[in-house]
Structures are given as C-alpha cells and as structure tokens.
Amino acid sequence: MSLTPRQRILAALDGSAVDRPPLWLMRQAGRYLPGYRAVRAKHSFWEVCKTPELSTEVALEPLALFPLDAAIVFSDILTIPDALGLDVTFGAGEGPRIGKRLRSASNLAEWRTDGVLQRLEFVRAAVHHLRSAIGPDRGLFGFAGAPWTLYCYIVEGQGSDDFRAARTLMHADPALASAALAKLADVTADLLESQCAAGADVVQLFDTWGGLLTTEEYARFAMPALRRITARLRAKGRRSLLFVRGGHHLLPLLKDSGVDGLSLDWRTSWRDARALMPSLVLQGNIDPILLLSSPQIVADSTRALLKDIRETSGYARSIVNLGHGIVPETPVESVRALCDTVVGAR
Image (cartoon, rainbow, N blue to C red; front, side, top):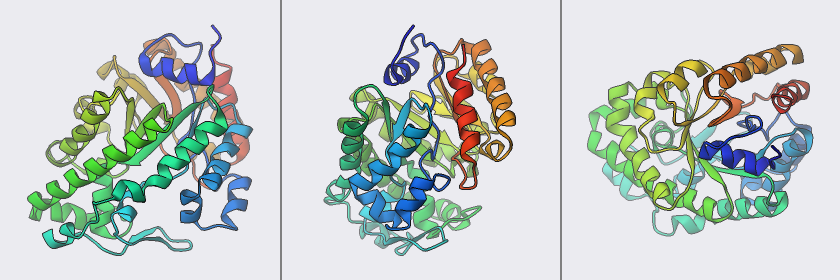
C-alpha cells in the first residue's frame, strides 16, 4: 500500500486501511526550532500570525526537517478574542493578556461581533497560502480554541492554573456564561468553516482548560457550545478533532460531542480510550516531556504507543501525536527519533 501523506491522514480520519498511522505534532512549529527563533527575532508574534508569508514560513520548517504527514496553520487560539475587540496582547516573556474582561452583561454587549470574520480574514489567508505552499499531497490542519477555553481567558484576563474567576462567574451568573459561550461558538464555527473552505482537511478544537470542569459542569456549560460548532461542521461534511487537556474523566461525555475524533493527553491510556470509543478517531498521546530525554527513550516510548495502537485497532482510526504541545527546550534529535520510529512502523 503506497499512500501520500494526505491520503494517509484522510484514510485514518475516514476509518480506512493505512500502511502506518499518520503523524503530526501539536506545536510542531515553535521555539524549539532555529528557523522559528530567527523569524521571531525580527517579527512580533501577532505579526507572524497575521502575515501569511511569515506564518507559512514557520509552518513549513518542521515539514522540511521531519517526515510529518501534515502541516498545521500557524496561528493562535486567541485570534477570536482579539477580533472581538477585547485587547489581546502578548508581552515579552509573558503569557497573553486580555484588556477587556468579561464581568457583566454590558461587557458582553460590547463584543464586536459585526464583521468579526472579516477581521479574522488573515487566518483564512494563512491556510490558503500554506495549502498552496505544501501542494496537494500533504495533509493540512486548521484549528481554533474551544469556547470554554476562550471564555476562561476572557473572564480571567490572563493565564491561570485554576481560572477561578471564570469558574466563579460560571456559577454566579450561569445565564451570562452560557450566552458568552454561545457567541464564542458561533464565531468559532465561522472561523473553522473558513479554514476548511481555504484548504484545511480537518480542524482541531483546543479545549486546554476543559479538564478543570466536572463532568456535570462540562455537560451544562461547555458541551452545548461544542455541539453548536460540530453540528455546523458536520452539516457541511467537515472533519474535526477535539483536544481536552486533563479531560480523561470527561471521555464518556466527549465521545458524543459531535467531533470525528479525540486527541488524548499523556495521562490517558490509549487502550482504555479505544475500548470506550471503538469507532472514533484517536490521536495522541506521547508525553511531550519525554522528548526532553534521549532519542532512545523517545523511540522506545513511541514503539510502545504503536504497539497499543496496532493491538487495539490495527492502525485504523489512529493518528500519532503528542499529549500536548512540544515544549521550547525540546531537542530536535528527539523529535526526529519520534518521527523516524513512526515512519518505520509496520
């Protein structure tokens, strides 16, 4: 069986036979790569995101270095709050800051929803530019932040370990939280659809902070917003994946979110997830911290994952990835060891 990288990705998503599991890595273009650091020395983060030529340049670097089956557009989950006029900034050496936090219904009314997709045009343009650069034989992922995670940042105003302000508002004013999540869902669906129309084969929703919620809280607040998105994508035949960091307790709920597959974090057993979800695509779940160790340890861990995949589903409906994004200190040699081990799988 001889498949192009794109055919391998699409076959895995459709549940068809593949020669080996397809491979891409979350945050595969980033600070661990010298080319990315060189670009960022000259351009701000937002400038790279909003300039298709620059976003394509950094997205292509890992494809030139490693035998990856797919590119992913270089962007950020906070493009949506930025387009809503919420004053998103990235300070040097700091995480993101949201200048206009959500605290009341009047704050929500100030969100600039009119023309928001036009202000997000640079994301669509970046996907289109990247598709042209990689050609028809490589897979292409688009993405967006899931509504719950976007809500967390918008309420908190910055990163947090527990997002207590966001969770407090959820309980104190559930109507406001639900209204905000619904608005975020609609904009997110528009953005993801525009990426698919521009050439993305599949889109991934990142719910980085979904694992903070109990199953009951996720069902009440996060799930309706997710289903609002996936219903629209499914109606147009678009493929989608969902990543919820720390969401192993949510798997029985997430399998009914309407996505085509789930991306597992490193704490979730592949075998347990496959037993629970035999018909969904699974992606993951190598611990990104393992890549800070030797190439041999990385190769051994990758072979262990491949064994789990092969013995539970025969490589069908499976994508090899990390359980979260590559960390900046990761040695290039470790990433190469992971990729070479997957490519050699039979």
